Length: 217
Image 1 (tube, rainbow, N blue to C red):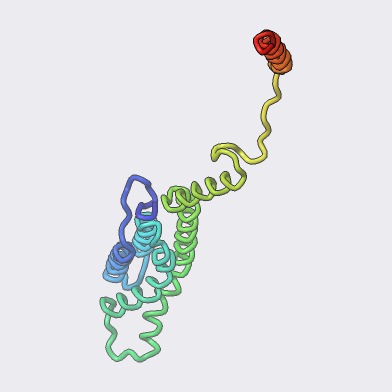
Image 2 (cartoon, rainbow, N blue to C red; image 1 turned 180 degrees about the horizontal axis):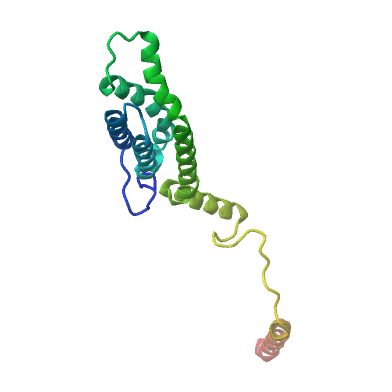
């Protein structure tokens, strides 16, 4: 089912909505950590992992590409932007100090980003493989292929290839032989009747000629 989420009975969301879920959770975690401690911490890690996990499980099956590749992009883009926007302002800081202010959260969040990416990729690949059998287009294609293969073999669609017919039992074999003998006897009787008919008809014609001969004389 290409429009379903990881749960078959729940309709999936578009990829843009899945991206919005991950961005919302990640941005909220970064905002709370930066306002609290000035850098990305445990709240960011929990929010980032939860948002990416919800995105890859809730998105439509046919739109899994964006949720699978988004974890590194979120960390590389959203964390520096949030740190620069709401981080502690340092007057007179140069470029080096700004790079340190932005680079420190990126370095600290790398293990979380790697773990989250691995989990998201695993879930995405699992959905692509396990939910493939629920795709109606693939199911129709498989059924059509089976029908064509069965028609090419000249057998019914439901018969498995290479399946042998069961051997008849002794009683069935005896009945079959008795039926063949009876048919042969009936056939022989019909042939004997055909052979005897011309003789009878010839005798009748001879008697007719004999009976008519005195009249002619």
